[in-house]
Image 1 (cartoon, rainbow, N blue to C red):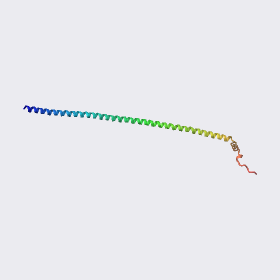
Image 2 (image 1 turned 45 degrees about the vertical axis):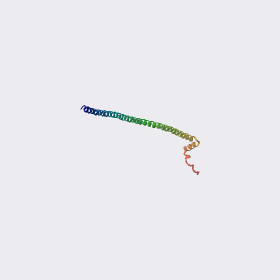
Image 3 (image 1 turned 180 degrees about the vertical axis):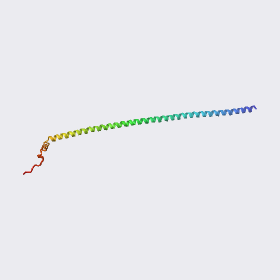
Image 4 (image 1 turned 60 degrees about the horizontal axis):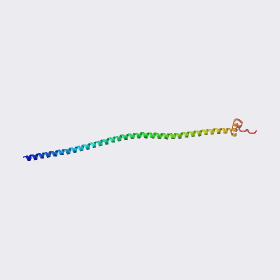
Length: 139
């Protein structure tokens, strides 16, 4: 009958409509999930790239710090070396001045002794043989 045919056609049409509606819903879900996956993927790539950049930057910073610290150590060592070399030079000069002063004093002392009356007596006594011998006993 017409009404049965109409009812059957509407029934198939409703089923087809429900199937298409469910297909569109699933397609929207898939599209939204794909968008989420793409966003997550981009974030992960960005994070991985950021991590790699930070690691490279950290290596550069470490190398720069090593160079700077080595330079700093060299400068400090040179500063200390110069300081103590200056002290050593000053002490060497003082030592040489004291040595010169002692030699001068010794020379002055020798000259003073040879010019003194005692020094002249001892030099005169040394020159003659008679004074070096003990006196002869009286006979």
